[in-house]
Length: 159
Image (cartoon, rainbow, N blue to C red):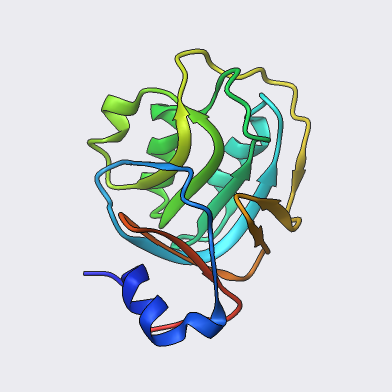
């Protein structure tokens, strides 16, 4: 059982930023929340993998891929890292692949769509910065709550 976005909106609407509903939800986990950690990349997932391997368990990785539909930034191998490390979930302003396998994993991943091509591997991008997309500002250390109704953000933990 989790914390549901509709309930948070009912109780704390003055404390929330609501993310534009432009994403699709994949993975077996349909409700997740945690502290935000960020990565900003373009068609390159080296920093995404590094973040998945190092951020604390229970965290949500937010990846700003610039909305690119040129390739996937997350596939089943990276999703498996997130599951193994007990991350809460992932938000990708970009695409994933291996969606059928990811749908069977204990992870929630919101993304803009799927693409079968893997990303390039140059290691370019930034980590741990504030990023903005989908009408919201994702700040490291803030809190993200997601379920099948959408995604909301808060500067403080809400229960």
